[in-house]
Image 1 (tube, rainbow, N blue to C red):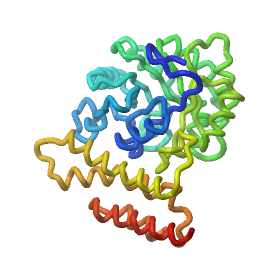
Image 2: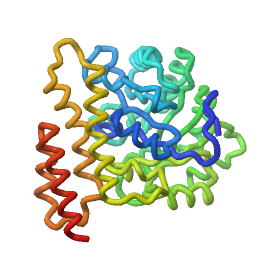
Image 3: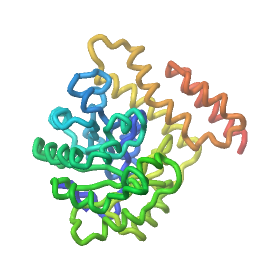
Image 4: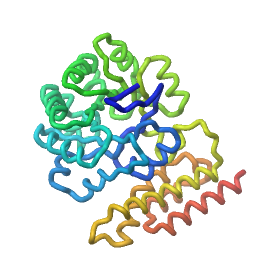
Length: 330
C-alpha cells in the first residue's frame, strides 16, 4: 500500500491524529511499537496563519517518527491554502485535511465534520490545497452529517477527482459523535467501488490487533487507523506481551521524551518550569486514561492527582505508587 511515494507494506496500522493526545513523545512510542504512520495533533488553519505560538509548536516533528502527517482543519478556502503552505515548510510526509472532527467547537463553526454540510466548499478547499502544495494531500472524514445524509460513497469519488492520494473514513456520522457502533459496511462499499483507486483507510471502534485484522479481512481496506484505544497504550500496535512494570516504564519514558522534545523547541522566553509543565500537560491525559491502572481499587482519587500534578517528580511519584499497588495485588 502506498500514499504518494510512501511505501507502507501490507496491512499497515495508522495512529489517528487526536487533539491533546498525539504529542511527539506518544507518536515516537507508537512508531516504536509498530505504527506505520503517525499524525500530529490536528491544527487550526486560522491559528496557524495568525502565528499562534501553541499551534506553531504542534508542527514540531522528528525524523525518528517518519512517515508523519500533519492534519489541518478550517472552513475558509484561503486560510486552508495558506495553512497548508505553512505546514509544508515544517517538512511532514503528507498533509491531511480534517473534514471529520465532530466536536462542537470545530464542527459547530463549520469546520471539521461541519464541512459535510457544505460539500461544494469542502471540495473547493480540497482542490485548492492539492494545487498549492507538492506534498501528498489526504482527507479524513465521516459517513455524512447524519443518517439521512450518508454521502460518503459519492463524496469519495469527488475527493479523488480533486487529487487527494488517500481517504480515511470514520464509520460514524457527525450526529453520532462517538456513540453507538461504527458502521464499516459503507467503508467497505467505498473500497470496493471500481471507480476508486486511491487507498482507503478505515477507522472506528478498533480496540485491538484482532479487531484490525478482522477489518482487513471483512472490508478489504488498505490500512486501519486506531484512535481512542491508543490512549495511554502505545503498545497496542504490537503483539509483544509486556509486563505491568514494562508498561509503566514506557509511560514514564513518554514523559521524559516530551520534556526533552518540548525543550528542543523552546522559545527564548520559556523557562525550565514552563517546558516541564507543557510536557506534563501533554502526558498526564495518557496516564489517567491508560488501561494499566484499571486493577487499582479506588483509582479515581489517584487519577485526579495525576491530572493535577505539575512537576515531573510529583507525577513519577504517583506512577511509582501505582506500580507498588499493582505489585501488591499480584
